Length: 280
Image (cartoon, rainbow, N blue to C red):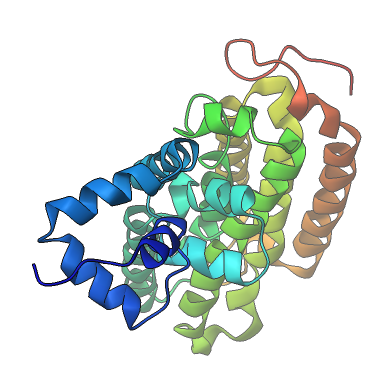
């Protein structure tokens, strides 16, 4: 070597303060000069070096955020909230593709048989199932992470519910556009969907995140079977008439009020299926 890095530049390099182009020259020189590397080792603060290695280890071990998570952070969502939100199982590609495929097949079937009842029966169940799969120890793989997150369980539930409902209702809305011939009847799934989802959430502290939506979905299907048995071939099923829509709206409001009153139970200590039934 015909030259070595000056002592002042070497100390600036160790502190991370050496500016280009001297920085580039020092980098190139240090790769081939053992003497300057030895001098650099003596100029580095051991405490700062250990801290740098710890930061590097943490950066390498940290999971890489997804594009959606990065977008949420840029929109102002807190890091931990974005991580918990994007960890929601039913917001992943496999579930969304499954929902899209199911809706496409349903819309095609409706066009073939010329009866929208199949779509109107299925559409309200998708948001109910999506919300049910987004929270709870039995179905959510990130449940333990959610327990130690710096937020109340009810708030996390509401965040995920809004996200799942937004995705589910958007897909249902797109499917509705594929049924223009039925007019406003093609939108008759919306109020039942809100009513079923709100009822399932309101019953979750009592029945658990699995039994509650299963029971609500079963009641909905039973209601449709009874309505079909009593309806004439040319009439609309009762749940999709003006009276049925009014009842669905009332149920959605009552269930939302009940859910708000029992919100503290979502923060109770988990026992078995969901909670220990803490104070509401």
